[in-house]
Amino acid sequence: MIVKRIALYLMSALYLAAGIAHFSASRVYERTIPAGLLAHHALVLISGAAELAGALGLLYPPTRRAAAWGIILLLLAIFPANINMALHPQLFPRIPTWALYARLPVQLALIAWACLYTHPATSPRCINA
Image 1 (cartoon, rainbow, N blue to C red):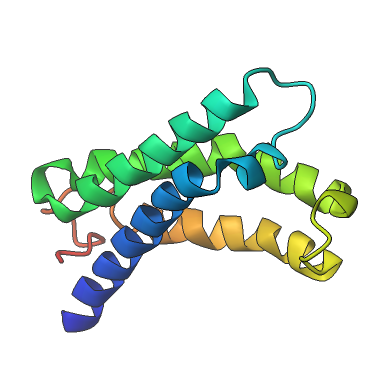
Image 2 (image 1 turned 120 degrees about the horizontal axis):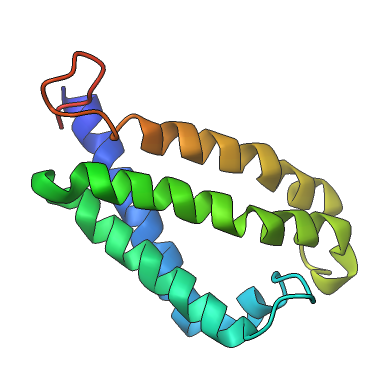
């Protein structure tokens, strides 16, 4: 039970930090967005706000399921940015190319992690943190 609670708090902290980073280093995140999309700055701020909302929503049991689903949808929505990073490593000279590709399966792991919190509290598959 304590491990499940720690995992929940770690997930929340991860998205809280990521959300804050979207606002404090928005120019870096703008480079991740595929060129064909418009309003890069707005997209970065919207995704940062979504991460903050997800982080806080995970901590409040009545909103936990919705927050987990929101995080999953967000991770799916930003997946093209991760692909864009891997395909254009010259935009990220400080990050090794292998690390840009490693981000892709990490996204899948993050989705799986969030899936743990999408079940109702009465479900035996649910993490009751």
